[in-house]
Image (cartoon, rainbow, N blue to C red):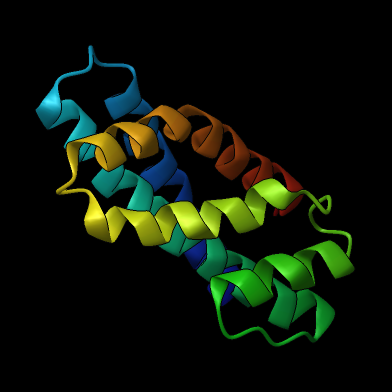
Length: 125
């Protein structure tokens, strides 16, 4: 099994858990859980992209931002600034002790989950 295939399974499961949290009525616990699930999904997203790009396009990337840019360059993802914004959103999660920032991140998570599904579709095995 290729590394990208193994990561794909974990990534798909993580997206499912994120979507599960987002389907619940919002309260502080659900919000915080969804943010944690986003963090996991994000990490698996870029690592899945990294493995796929290395295996299928002989491209090396070393960070989420460079992986998204390599995915654009190789036609795996549309060149959409949302992906770079998503990297910033992930960086904000370190500061979710701020209620306003936690609410801001949470409000963006449904779109993030939708985009994660797009990555799964784009890298179908």
